[in-house]
Length: 465
Image (cartoon, rainbow, N blue to C red; front, side, top):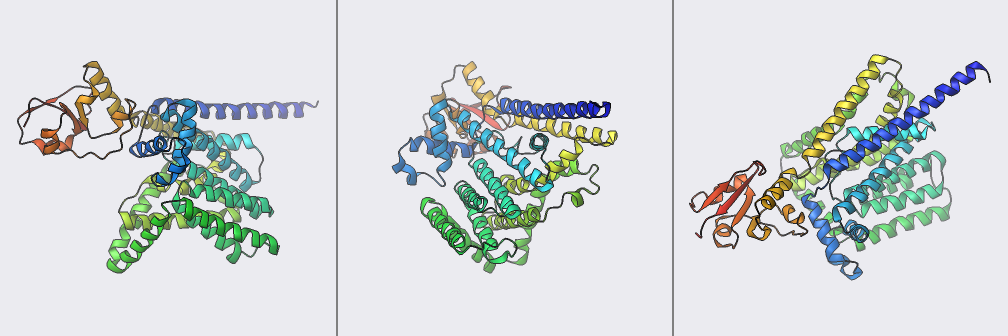
């Protein structure tokens, strides 16, 4: 073997080893974050777990469940194996994360037409480690994960179809985007939007065969009808649309400006870590990695999602970053490609800054995952166990405390003076701002302890009102 070839082989082997290191470091970081976040339950999570308990394998109860019950059904069957709903939801999250990371790396490889799958996978994993997906949403029991996963799978198959014209990928797209609708109801509009583009607006990849065209049109229509039938919440879409028309007729121009400002802030906040990473050595990046089909379908997916967020806020005056996560995921391949290139930057100073920013973002996420672990509730659980207070002696507004004692309670609680005076409870754990409800009473003492978080007030009723 020639010396030059030997050196090249050595360098190639070192390159592969470094990629494996990056990949395994990413997995370790993921495990650390899961450990820090566990156990965690969000308020929505109680609803999904309650639905899973109500379902209990009885298919006839499916239509009695709240909202989109498919996630709760999946939770129920996974829980049969592990007998712990928190662990079951983490398994769903882990599988969803794995799917997202794999398919975002596949989309990145497709855009660049490169085949270094391990490095794309490592780059995608690093990217997830620096975003709010790994901090704010890692431990949540929500159906969004499965919706996001199948949405990205559908995006990949649509790209494959437009790159290579294989009808099987068009079929995979239809099936996967339909499944995503079963977890996020609004994605039905994406299904309809892409359907219109494929059959009416697209000139490059028209379906030439009449029989294939007939098959796909019938399949689209059947799936939309099936969605309306099996999704009890599909009627809500009509209600929301009616409200939008009412808003358009009743409100002034200023009313419609606020959501635009709010959506812009949310998107900037969500993309800020990626923008910081991309600020380094980005010269010529988009010119090298431009892909027309990716650009078209990013717009085709993202524009309806932004509009949906806009109209949702008009109707409810509520928004959440998690409704913008699909937009982040759809644009992640761009940043994955950037990290793919940045990992081996020749400029040592740029490489140092790149890894420093990644380290800072990962450290921020680790801290967030510890803080978002329902620490205040778990600390209070330690307090009452240390002081031998029985759980049935305590009134608490936050139902999540009950969950940590093995009970799922989804009943809405509202603390007031009547509840305080007439209930059988001796102790009350309430939000601190609720203390004003009983300020005129003299029959209670406030208990202070380092394990009782300042956002809660823990009260002992000394005698009846």
